Image: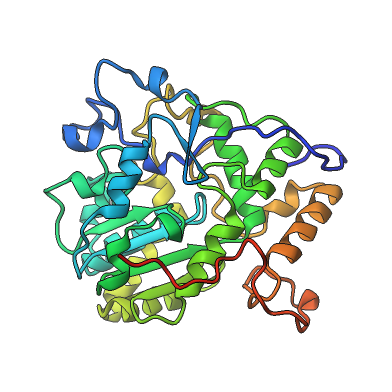
Length: 357
């Protein structure tokens, strides 16, 4: 991320872009239906609407044109079906990987669906303009994607039998992935210097707010029978066992042949080669993959190739303070683990129960 030694200092906030995983394909691409193609109404073009400007909704930044206060409110107040399956992530934490895995599980390992239907149509987004809750032709069970923090999430979910899978990822890798993504998203502003971007990330002055608040909010759901917390690192370390765990959570056990097919077709190389999953259907005017692939590396720990010593130290200071009192995660250094004298939540950590209607 950093190409030179530098110390993070106070920097003016800079708006940064959102993951393209919520973007639909433009009209005319692969014959996609109009309801999934357009997220903004004519006569506005993507270049006019997706300008890198942001608005705040209940204190959280959202990109104008992809979202609106009305679309987020619609997602908050939407009805939920008991067989719905939600994929919840902070941006760039493995959203599309989980969509691919679930798409294959629901089809007993048959890759036909993943090879014929774009990934954003298989698991449409809850909070976007013309979002998932406005679509009437979704197969059951519905796969629904969301980056919303828990306080803005669909209220009806918390009193339903619908299931949610939250994918967490090392925030250092998240920051690097977001930085690189913003470099190829032509409709979005450049993220600025690595120091500027990292400072904004640590302060939560990015789309969907603070990574720390996001994971601390959702981790409170851990242990509930309709909620599964899994990490990108676990998927990376043992995809076979992780898929088995997901199948068990969904109550959809698979035979060994079907399980093997899910693992094979959801592997990074398979997704990268699949036009329905690698976002190459989008034109360079929206996502210029000539200068970097959307599915970039699919590895853990790449942040070590980008962070400077100063950036790493600054990140660690914020991480230790923000995550104080929480259990360790797969990306945590075991040598840093020690009993916490004060396991109470930090001031930014909500202490109330998850919202309900």
